Image (cartoon, rainbow, N blue to C red):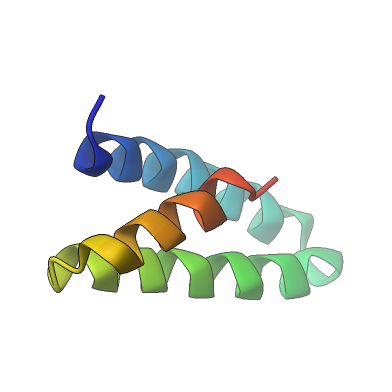
Length: 65
């Protein structure tokens, strides 16, 4: 698996996780907000072709639970 594939795989997983946080309602607001920021940052790194930022974002996505 390469960096782009790993990012895409983690983005899919984190988007599913984001939906779960949103379904919780009010108690999940903080988690969903933080997760959305992480997803946005990762998507931006992909759009900018910034390899160093992609590596950092991949680690951040992998740590989301």
